[in-house]
Image (cartoon, rainbow, N blue to C red; front, top):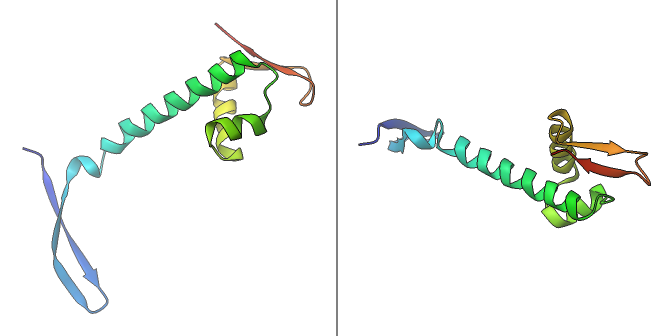
Amino acid sequence: MRDIISKPDCQPRGCLPLVEVPVGSIDGANVDGRQKTVEKTVEKILSLIILNPRITQQELIDKTNLTRRGVEWNLKKLKAGGRIRRIGPDKGGHWEVSA
């Protein structure tokens, strides 16, 4: 059986009855889901770069439905991990995917 934490729900006019919240939903269940989402996003970005090494950040934004900051964060993570590198200037350059 899952552990349950009782959490009071107090409002300005007084406290309501306790609300039962499963522990897994507080500390860990969502972390695995986020990690899988990040991995899927990284793989999608890598696939798009492989298909078009000259892809722009705007095209990545459009095709992944991420914000500009989200695309920048993922590209930074991929570069830091040595999975991609930028060859040439921002305009006119291309991406290279490492094996």
